[in-house]
Length: 140
Image 1 (cartoon, rainbow, N blue to C red):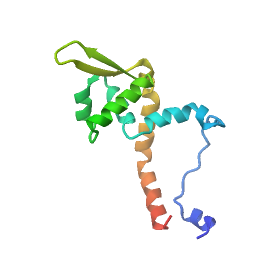
Image 2: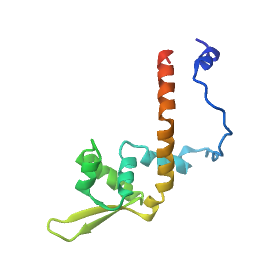
Image 3: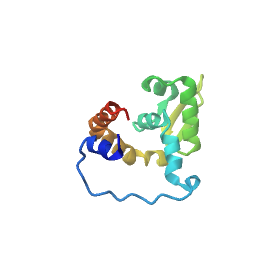
Image 4: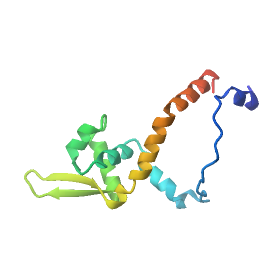
């Protein structure tokens, strides 16, 4: 199948004006977007940030709310987010010690882009599924 015939079989997408995309930096090691996506694009960080967006939470409460995350993976994810300055960790001097996690000011600033991405994903889920089905039908 040629590229031209494959393009003809793709679902029609309404043409819109291209949004203003930022320039791509030449070296990926200097690209700030890559560093953020490396963190938030992993399997769990996005969900942890979403759950902490509702306010501070203790470790076990987070673990119960995030379906499928293991204790070890939640620990590693929280440490990475803390290292990046997105999450703070507060230990209360009780017996046993209570550890609470919260978004920092920097972490809370992710609210607008995370909400935008979440809305975009919800609005385009059907179109993405249709494109996948069409692609799979042609043997991609």
